Amino acid sequence: MSKGFVEDDITREVRMRTDIVALISEYVRLRKTGKNYVGLCPFHEEKTASFTVDPDKQLFYCFGCGAGGNAFTFLMKREGLSFPEALEKLAQRAGVRLPSRSRYRGDESRRKENKRLLDALEFAQSKFRDMLYGSRGKDALKYLETRGLSREIIDKFGLGFAPDEWDFIASSAKRSGFHQGDFLKAGLLLERPSGGYYDRFRNRVTFPIYDSAGTLIGFGGRAIGDETPKYLNSPETPVFRKGRELYALSLAKPGIRRKDRVCVVEGYMDVIMSFQHGIDYTVAGMGTALSREQARALLLLTGEVYLVYDRDEAGKRATRRSIDVFREAGGRTRIVSLPGSKDPDVFLRTEGPGAYEKLLDEALPDIQFIYDEARRENAHLGMEGKIRVMEAMVPVLASLSSDFERSAYIEDFSRDLAVPTDSLNRDVETYRRKSKKARKYKDPQNRDTTGYDNQRQPNPASGSKRVDKTGGKKPTDIEVSVVRRKAEEGVIRCLIENPELLKKAMETLGEQDFADPVLRELFKILREGSPDTVADERIQAQVAELCLRFGDVSRDSAPRILDDCIRSMRRERLEELRETIALAERTKDQAALTQAILDYQRLLKQLKSTGDASDGSAL
Ligand SMILES: [Zn+2]
Image (cartoon, rainbow, N blue to C red):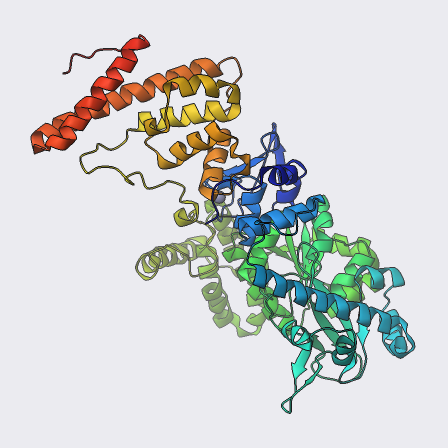
């Protein structure tokens, strides 16, 4: 763990030029309330916003799981980066140049390799682009134009062309002095059994794939001729993780935020067409089923998710899977059915964006979609069909956490099926009881298994901010009281917000006065400088908690609060020492007894000198 001070001026410079609200907004949709912003916590699953960002203090804190910190901590936690990596990323964003030989640099060899892979991808991208507009790209360009894409949109999405050659990229990379091994690792080349390399993408239109921050990390390729498969993606590489990325998310973020909704479509072409028609809040998966991580990333940006999949059987299966994934991630979806089995691409070209947005407004809630599908599939079965529909719906209904929603749907469906509400209700209740019991036994973490239960417990492990309070204490020591801990927190909070009080506090307080190790560390840091530039995550989370969990300390009341807290720390310490002395006498621990009496007398003297001693009569 990186700890302690780093080169302050650079860190501070980067921090000053970084707006934490803008940074976090790239991951979480934030809503302004008062002077702060709130949103769904990206570090635990929740349905009501308890994640708070304070623009004045440039700190975040989650009241649900206790995660907190500054811009660096956020990026470290969210992207799994080390402090040097987070600093580098933010510096880049803020346009601050880091000294080249700096101890900020993280895992140098990994960083260097990733950089080489990204360079390889950029190199290929420029080659593919050139090729599309050259003489050999004529057919590819014509194909895109027949599909109705404008030049502008082709450029916006960086489409290109990989010619029908075995070693177009392989040999141009070599000619330009690149190492072919990097191109292999970046997923651009494949190895020949006889040695050497050949191109992965051949005779295909290329779709560059960017991560959510806009870095090129891979490619998709669509065959121009009869090659199979029709669509081909880069494989997983150190820089490209399919379960994590969404196609066009970096481009769609502003639209998603503006409209507070997102459309999830199947194909890259559907995304591009949507953008061309102004539906610029559209993304797609990576040709595989959506993962919970992808669903979660979207839910953090908006609660309005529209699934616009094909209406063929494969599309319906994909819809059903995605409904489940979003439910598991704590959200819900609406299902858009484009009439006449059209895909978004075709629909937008023939009917236009107005008609498309109208369909979004009429989209079915996910539960209704599941019901309608079950109805349709069993329509020809008469009574038997009805029973099957009921059987299909019971687990879905049982998993709804809102009583109102559940009973409304039960009412609705039983009316439609012409069965008594009571009987459907009973079946759902029985199922709920049974599955609760089953969960209790099968799953100690109380994770739901149906995929429809929205009731989520914050994961206590993810936010374990409480530190081990027994660290370094003698066995005879008494547990630190809540009052003392609160008083210690109060002192530190006053000092963070009013550093001018430090001198005064240092006259009467030393770090040994703090029982909590993190607070003790913070006191030391405050004495030596400012906690802004400390990389330790525990320290940053503690600072954020102190600053955001409690209200502001006004400048006027700070000296009084500080005095009160210090006095309270003393009194509590005195009380603890009395208990320790009593315990030591009982256990005949002579060494502990002597030490405690000495401490007690010293403390009492201090209190008397400041006129604070309430009573010293206990000894
Ligand atoms: Zn949280």
